[in-house]
Length: 120
Image (cartoon, helix red, strand yellow):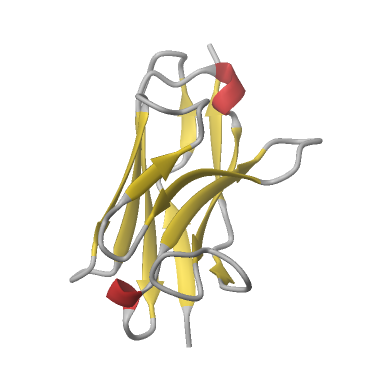
């Protein structure tokens, strides 16, 4: 059974940094694409970072150069390093496991989310 548990969220001042983690259970973590999404109040959930099973990454324009996704396949952990955080980065952040090595759709598994608040 696949479970995803996010951690590392919290309150940070503008310009600060946070590192989110997503710990996965279940087999074959290394075979699946993973993604980080976020959802702010009143907004739709959006994809901010994608990482394939091979480690290829893609980012939303709004976070390019500030966020970095990485994965530790041995420990089954997905990371999101967030630097130079801005108030508009405030959201609940979710990790997702895709259904195959280079796609996050259709289907997949979601974590429960972790709150990130950027405020002075």
